Image (cartoon, helix red, strand yellow):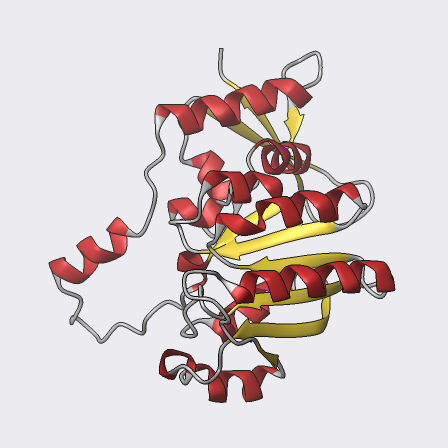
Length: 246
């Protein structure tokens, strides 16, 4: 059965540019049966959302800012999330915000047995990131720009490279230790198990952060790790196993 998800978007805190890509990403994890966005729609800066909401069937929730300096949007979103939780109509939540104010909400939803996905910008504070089961950066959801033949400048290439995280010794150490955690007596680990444990250790771990579409090519790029393809007794696809070189 498809996982039913409630998608709650902090309109004051998230740019409208990549909502289509964001909804496509969310669909990978379940069926977004509830889609709501919160904000004060009387404010001009939220006008860009209008067409995007219609195209993606997202329901706008009006929330007036009653007091200067207080974020009424956060409160409305948190109250709705708890109402949805107790309605028992969903299996998980997707909280779209770069605001650490939703850290406690994410923790509470997981305590109730909900799967919690977070989506936000790279500036998102770490407490909110680690409170989620998985956290996805909006920056990696941007579609690849169509390059004109021979028109890609060194400046464009540099800008694109700047958006990608470098694979640091700390990243390699994380991957290697995770392989060793799930490896058999010979040191080999099934890549699927490695990926699952990496996600638990670091919810924002994603091969796309480093410029790779999948985990396999990311692992291939690390010289200290070897890969081995094995026959799958249950299907035609190959099973990939990895091992830290001695």
